[in-house]
Length: 114
Figure: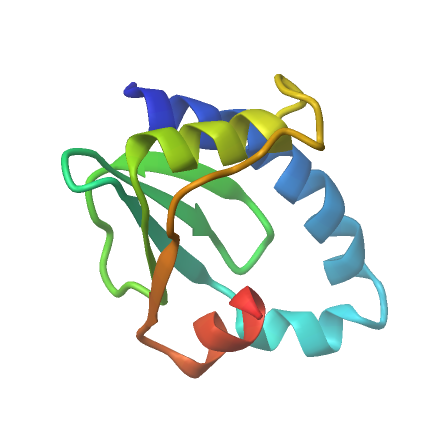
């Protein structure tokens, strides 16, 4: 697994831990309509895809999985810094430099991103 994919894979269990209880509760009626979700993270030389299925299971794969809901484009350094912060490998106040662009291919992806 490449760097970005590896860092994404480290947060997949946290995504599941937050999402699955929500799906089991009353809020699950609302949230379920936004699943599954497919987010592609691209550095230009590396692509990793985060897939969250209708049951709240999260997995990371290399490359693209279709159909894509959100495409996020940034430099390797920007992604790695942001994901290291998300994984607790860097302090939360670490500066994240560089531009992050996003493209939305579905309404549910756009809503979830915002």
